[in-house]
Image (cartoon, rainbow, N blue to C red; front, top):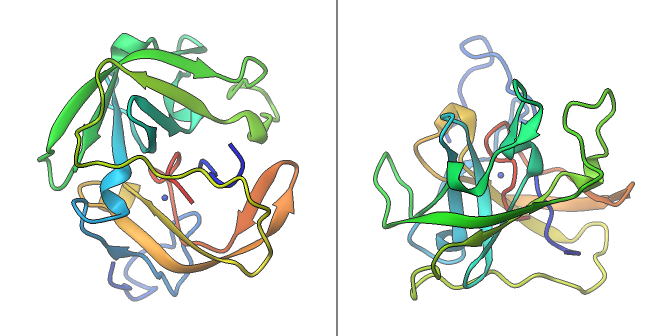
Length: 196
């Protein structure tokens, strides 16, 4: 899954709102159209426990997201597929399609509750119970070498603007560390699992 990294407005005065983790005072995130390319391939992943994250359609029946989004800290186990829902075109409580999840695969060595979780294992692959809508193309997964300085975009359903898709389209790759891509994209909780 090289090239696709899991993790994602108008700036508000610093005194009015504390900074969010992953978003600095010069917040570059802006609302994007969930029905336009490439954003229509970014989905909202909902759980029956009212949790949510972002995911990316990478195959007609395949969505990738962050593993920690599917972890129940009370039971210390990952949620079952029957507890997961994928929403296409989500915007302000409306969506174009709801698809259930048939199977979930996570890294067997990844434990989100560990004192030091293995971050490179923080991924999940969701197999959808039915294909994605025909008008939603899977995002290509890059296998080409990535270079520091390369322009990037990161979009997702951030905790502070959970009802709309937000994106930073003016960020860059800084390098790699421990199997992860390091970038300067503005993103915060909820954007986890979004495509980079």
